[in-house]
Length: 192
Image (cartoon, rainbow, N blue to C red; front, side, top):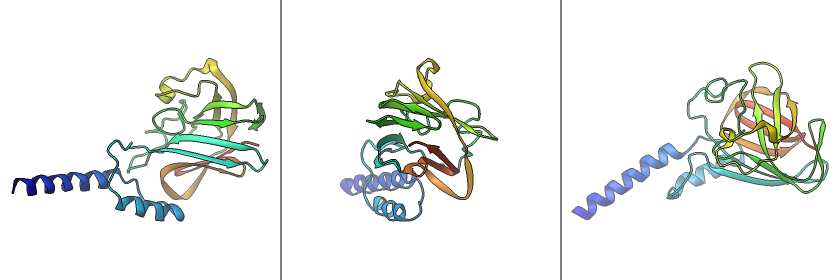
C-alpha cells in the first residue's frame, strides 16, 4: 500500500511537471518533435528555457554556429514587458546567446573578424532594433554581465511582426543570415 502511494505521488508530480515544462506547439516538423518530446519523461535537470545549438551555411557559403536559450511565451506579454524596449536584451534566455564563425563575415554593414561573439539586441517599440556583437561571449547571466566597452559592432535590423505567433524563441540560419522568431516577432539579421 505504501509503495502504491509513493508510485502514484511520483507519477502525479511527473505529470504536473510535464504539463508545465512543455512550451507549446510549433509548426511544421517542430510540431512532430514537440509531440514526441511530450511522450518522454522530463530530464531531471531540464531547463525552463532549453539550450539550443545550430550550425549551418550562410548564402555566402560560410559556416556559422549559434547557441542560445529558448524561452517560451507562456501567456506573457513579451515585447515591452518581459523584454523591455530600449534596453539591452541577450536575445534568448539564461546565458548570453553567442555566434561563432571561422572566416571574416559582414554583419549588417560591418566586417567582423572570425571568432566567438555574444549577440545582443536592443528592442524598440517602433523602428529598427540595434544588433550588437560583443567580444565577451561566455556570459553566464546574459545581459546582466553585458559591458558596452567590449562591443565589436553595432548595426541595425528591421523587425517584422507577423500574424502567427511562435511560442518558443528560435534562431535559424536562413536568408539574409539569421532570423530570430518569438511570439509575433520575425527579426532578420543580415550576415554574409
